[in-house]
Length: 439
Ligand code: PXL
Image: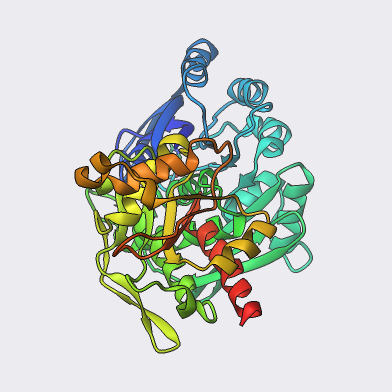
C-alpha cells in the first residue's frame, strides 16, 4: 500500500512529516513524503518556518506521482496561499482519498499557516478533502467563529461540509471531566465516538490521528471504521507518549501490529455468527491475513492453533502469529500471486449444497480435483499450490471460494477468500445463512 504525506518538517520528529514516516514504518505501508515547509522546533519551543518554493514542491510531487500508484493522501501543514493553490491544482483530479489535518498552531505556539492563507485554505483545501480532521480550536479558526449555544460544534461541522469536505471529524471535544468525544459528520449521518479523557499534554496526537485515518481509508475501510480505528490507536499513542526532551511528551508509535488488530476483531465477529459451528471442518479452521505482496507464510498472520467447534459454538485456540498457519496461508499465497488484492482467507467444511446455493448468489467459485494431481506434486509436498493454481488458471475475477472434494485420507474443503478479513466474514455470514435454510 502506498501513502503520500504532504506537510511540514519537524526536526524533533514529534509531529509533521517525520512523525508520519515513523508511524507508517510500523505498518506494511510505503510512506512517501512531500515537504511543504521546514520548521525549526523542539518539544519546548518553536523557532522559524521557511516554506519551500513551488519549484521544489512540484519536483517532489511529480517524482512521487509519476512513479507510484497512491492509495491515500494525507495533507498536514500547507503554510501559505501559493502552496495551497498549487496543491489544489495538482490534487483535485486525484482518485485516491485525501485526508486533511488542518493544522493551525503547534503545541508550543508556532503558526503553521499564515493568517491570510486561511481564506484560500477554505476555498481550495477544504473542498478536496475526503475527510477533514480539525480539533475544536481548528474548527473554530477555519469557520472564523466560536462555539456557542447557538453556534454548536455540530453546526460548525456542517458549515465545513457545506464548503465541500465530504466528511468532517471534529476530534477531542471535551464532554465532561472524564470524557472526550469525536464528532463524525458523514454525507448522510452524524454521530459521536466517545472515549476516556487522558490528562496529558502531548506533541503529535493530531498528526497521528489523521495519519491513521489515512491508513485505514487506504485499506478500503469505511469512514466510521477509520474513525474508530484512529481514535483507539491515537489514545494508545497518547498513553505511550514519552518525555524525550525538555518540553511536552511526544506520542508513541503503533507498537501493536495493525494487521493483528484487524484480524483479531474479525475473528471475534466470526465466532459470533449464529450457527457458525456448522461450517467448521474435522481438521478445524484457520483464518489468515497477509501483508502486501507476501513472499512466504511468514508474511501471513494466522492462528497458531485453530478455531475449533465446541458444542453449538466455536472457540479460538491459540494466538495470532506470523507463520501461524501453513495450509490456509499457502493457499492465500498461491492466490495472491494472480490476484494481489486478495489478502485474507479462511477454510471451512465442504458441502455440495452450499456450493450450489452460493453460486446462485453470484459468488465466484472454482474447484480442483486432488485425484488428478501429478505424482511429482504429491511427493514434492506442494499439493495446495498446485491445486490453487489449477483452480484459478482460467479465472479472470477474484475468487470468493475455492474447493476440492477430497482424496484418500484428505478431507474435502472450501476456502473462502477476500480483500480483507471483514469481507471474508461477510461472505461467511452469507454461507452460514444458506446452510440454515437447507436444514
Ligand atoms: O501536529 C501538527 C503539526 C503538523 N506539522 C508540523 C508541526 C505540527 C505541530 O507542531 O510542527 C510540521
